[in-house]
Length: 276
Image (cartoon, rainbow, N blue to C red; front, side):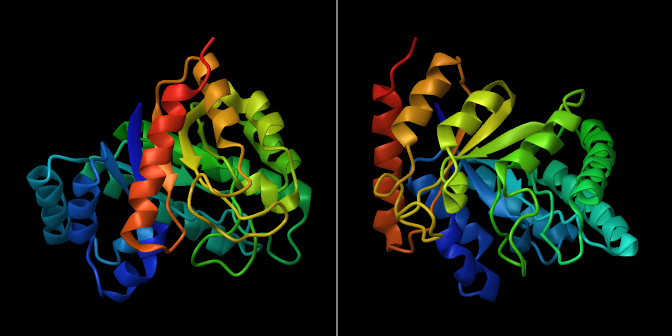
């Protein structure tokens, strides 16, 4: 098991400058993680000095960068904005390469008023194909998430309903697009986490371990204390022979204990998951 973490609970501190990326890297090392994940919003500056400082912090704490969570929005009704989204994602891919990250989390885009399903699906698949070409050049894996709502977004994800997520994924079955599988997001629409998992298990490259207090409500809680069927997900992943990354999406805002207790839960639950 390789363990990383996306520190959603720390977003506000880092976004506002009360904490730094280097602080998160140090904290991740103290937690015993194998890697640390980043939000693309951690990097409003991408100059050579910022990249150097980040890489130095990673090296000093002997920890690797795992995944950068990006917020691609290919469903915007304005074609000029969709073109800009592709330009931005290509820049994100270049940043991932410069930092040494292995994955970029990609999203379909927002459910903008006026965006029709057929057109939206086409825009997303076109955008992903072009981004995949760029990612391949840099050795970066794109991981498409069954997502809900991005931190900087106004609307929920266009592909939040499972059927649209699968339609887009199926349309890109001939590509190396991977899946960042979130263990809780389907619950927001009262959808079946395990049924979705069964359909995409062999395309998963990262598991986002996330938890919500109850079905039908987007209220994050500490991993292992909510409605997400994490033990069952782990059992199925192990049966499928999965040996990739597990990334805890820590969004409980319960301080250091939120991280330490989530890590302990994931480690214990993975070890006890039934393997075929």
